[in-house]
Length: 285
Image (cartoon, rainbow, N blue to C red; front, side, top):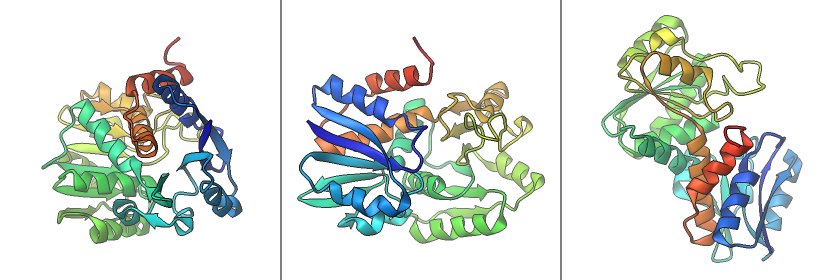
């Protein structure tokens, strides 16, 4: 039996063990996928363990997506530009960092029927998740990206990072904090993305949305990276306004599927993985 797992601190919320286990069982692979709660001072040791043949690969979640990078032999180009690694794979005896959030996010939009090429995007929030999403949208052909948030400094830093790393030239806009600039940015957007933790189950902002429902319209596509609950307040308000919502669960599933393919060279059964996630979230019997 080979071992794989996910490191983070803490890890009580992780759905990855259920999703990966369902995939390996369906694929007939003898792999044990585990949650490895890893304090910051143990990240290097966790990476070093992967060199043992008993280990297949490793996923990385907060707060270690940046911290893991110096311990790797190589970081794939897009992950390096994003500045975050969420998957470590073995390639020719070397440990290589990848960011499958990028591909997982775009695949979720594509599967939902959401067009990206030639569209204007508003991203709410900045940080590790925003960087992967913004890079993916730029790579997929979005013509403009605006970033909004609570702090002007954080917004400016996110825009500067995207300007330096975006694979193609594009229009970038800082949305000043406040209701009026946010309203104008929503009116100009085709796709609105929540990259904050607002709306997450059991969080202080569980029943809140980063945007009031009055700012959505029927022409909007609205995407949330929060997957628990499956329909956040953000998505509920968008749906009620007639917008087209894209839930965060598929991003989680597709990024996991890409990791499994990197490790095994085989395409995993995403339908089975989705069902396992839905069962873990109490969405089905």
